[in-house]
Length: 257
Image 1 (cartoon, rainbow, N blue to C red):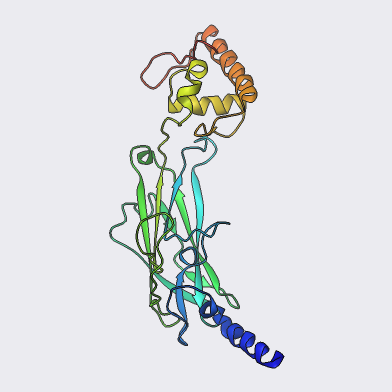
Image 2 (cartoon, rainbow, N blue to C red; image 1 turned 45 degrees about the vertical axis):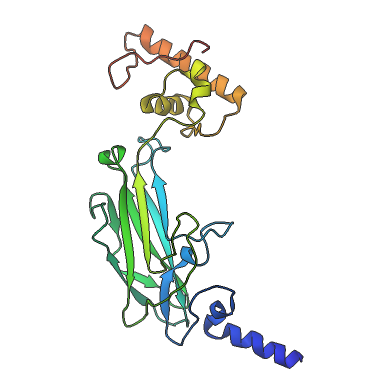
């Protein structure tokens, strides 16, 4: 019996075909190496949420600190390890709204390194002014070549969309749109009317990351930071250089500040 169990385990491990031993509703390994987007099957996070798209925002990063962002989209092989680098063929779908060389840059040579079953598609997202007006999308597609097939099929649903997962296409959506956070209306009596400029300035004068007030902050910390902001605005006004909002009005705080 022990010998029989060992044989089963060995069978599942040979050529890393353990994939076929998992309880997944996808086509099993057929002897040909197949390439797919890893997050669609293994999941992206600790909760193993299976996705074929994701959104990125620059909005909570100070423009003075962050002008681009590198995203590495993982791809994975169902099949055998090779002792040589294997080139992966990709296509940028025409339905993408982002422009190469403007909104993003992508490596010309994508590989699965030797002795590995996971590779990455590195995409650099450029923080452009028009991202404040609307989101942009980049749709990546894996294509067959001499190294890999792309015929993996399944019937699992995406964790972030009400549709079946696509194992060979992946969409990145990105923007720089900062909207009024959910909890701002509660804080309004202290911090005043919302503006993107105010929130960024609040972070800069306090030397903190852009606060995400979609969650309620520690109120003691918030009041301390508010005092710093109030002192800064007062100092600028006394110096004859008041801070102005984008519409030309003077930036102010709420009545409880």
